[in-house]
Length: 145
Image (cartoon, rainbow, N blue to C red; front, side):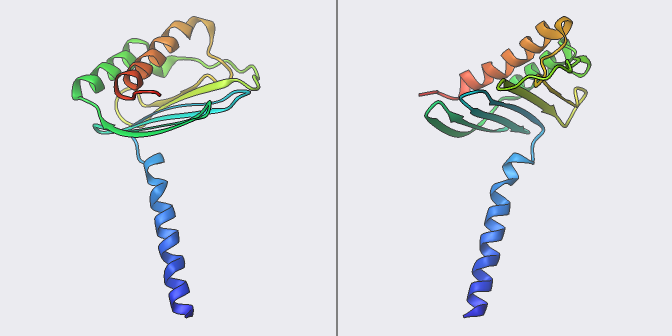
């Protein structure tokens, strides 16, 4: 009996560890969360595979899809053209704000940026252009209900 319980426990641990892998194994991530009525939105890209999840406003969406090489190249170009690596974050404290974070683990735009404390005014247009590129991927591939 102890052996069966031990085996079941091991299986549960392995399954729970594997379910979180999608959230740590990515090349590019876009995450939007927080607010007074919290939302949680994630877009994770690994090669041409994309995992999208949204939770909030009474909705719960999870979708996996493929992204074309052209769309990946377009996203990379937008990151480069808008100087993703040079965007400066402001240091002011904000509370109950919806925060967007972008993490690029691969390529010439490797870096991590967030607007948790907003971005410096002279980089606001660049940041908005990058956010719009991610939003376009979401809008083109995920049908919100």
